[in-house]
Image (cartoon, rainbow, N blue to C red):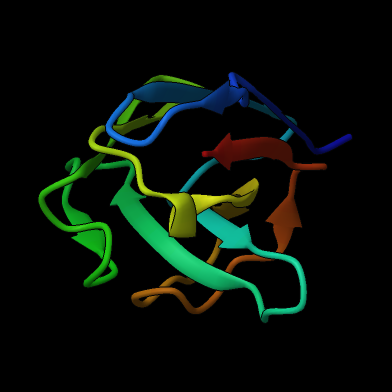
Length: 117
């Protein structure tokens, strides 16, 4: 069975940092990504990493503050200089056959809550 399990969400003050983790299993990863969804808003892509060569892609709001990385079946999202508008549930996502930017992700975790005050 495919499983993606996130951890690391917490409540932090503005300007603080968090590192989210995701353990993926049950499929061969082509790309991994982090998405987020704030209350009342649509889910949006945060960052993507291509598992073969480590190429990364970021949403504009994440560039310069967030860093996605991967170590085998573990994917991380380092978030620095957090802002209240970063408050959201963060989801780990995986793609096995196709990915392009934030498209192609069919496997999802349950999410981890990040609250910035």
